[in-house]
Length: 425
View 1 (cartoon, rainbow, N blue to C red):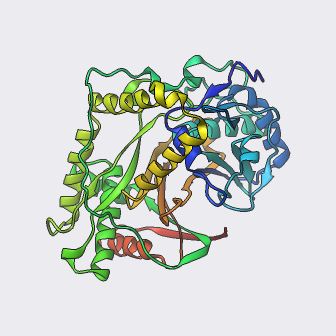
View 2 (view 1 turned 120 degrees about the vertical axis):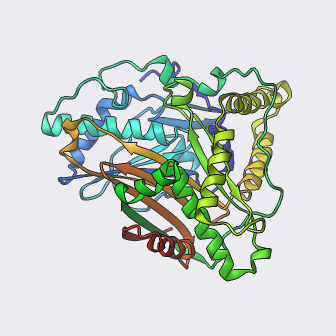
């Protein structure tokens, strides 16, 4: 693989994830695909070797320079390993070799990504491409050309490796979303020595009628259910007049909005919030408020202005001249502050589609975010075929949020199944 050709400065989002990492925590996420049959490690390794050159910005290492971070393709394709510790933090030494892990368990292929390398959409393209190469070798399948499944024989496209944030130009000088300065609710409980996961498996047809009746997307409906559950949790802890603002961090994939298909990070966020002190919020009122906030936040010129503001700061001559260790201090403090302005992240990767030639071999997909560095909860959502998989992860003892989510789903008469997991940290 050509090292220098793909030696790239980290993108605008990636630098935050690199600066915020520490010995005990790395901003990572896991994508999984469960097959009908057992995974054969040797074939998976061969498939990974075959596609390595097609993904120079995903199968990549991350390094520190004097002024900035940079990434480049791996020198050696990583070994496929048996699944062991969930979302184990990556050291600088590990990142300098490869910033992703390729793992397997009995019937499942797992990919763990350091968020500086790519986001959920980029990760899904890599996972589907790896799975296709695996099935091509094992089952001799062939599929039509697809923009989401990249062929191992093709050369990487310029669009795939570009820093898309630098491509956005705005006519608006500046734009900022007005946020409440009031205290945001944070979960409090005894810190655990393990990670706990709870996956809700819901038939999409159980949610669609409710979403349609409210004229909103599933993302807005689920966000409202989570916010309402947090409000209900607060009611048990505090008088309604003393409740804190509930705000969630909602990443938005920008590729469709700007018609750019980079495989690097290309997301921005919206932080919908509800202040329980202002009204007795029903689910319907919460849904309406979130929809209004998202419609405003997703206006194209508003997004462009926010992106350009971030990029211009990064390109500021004074900032450029600061040595990296000083940049890290500023970025780390900014990240810690930002983390406390929301209660948790809710990342919905949407519906995953694969060609019918692959469908017969795949049972399900899954998405798990790491917990935050300072706050204990996160939520990753993904859908495949007729099922929605909503994954909560926590590093505190009691299932505070999960209990309220289950209560609310029962109240809404939404049927679901639950799958729990416990993992050592």
